[in-house]
Image (cartoon, rainbow, N blue to C red; front, side, top):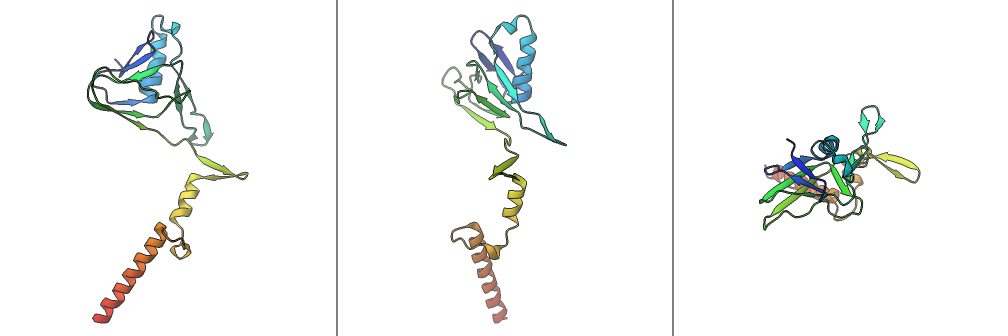
Length: 172
């Protein structure tokens, strides 16, 4: 038995009792595809579509995103708990993919999504996110002049440390 149960009549994906973590690709999308193949479940409106996963270069793949379709929603089980959803999950209309559980229970939903952007295009050129991170982390402190920036704070702290060391050496 999977982590969820599909209710085609009410367009609900019911999280089974005790399940606190779901993987979008495995526990939702793959399980839904299996459910559609059983009995006459194909008669119900499509619950979701998954896009991405395409190869973009050797060893790199486009991130996968899953959309709930046709007003399908996910309903957590009725009990106080935290439900973690791993993967990119959205609805086409931007509404929440979740509906409240029954009763007066507190369910916190954590969405753990992955990177959707591998490169940023600006003025006709492309810069990958790794290059941006390296440029930030490898910036020379002497080149940072913006007051209030982290770099300026580090410069100030370094100067204070140098001044303190100079005073200590003078006292020795």
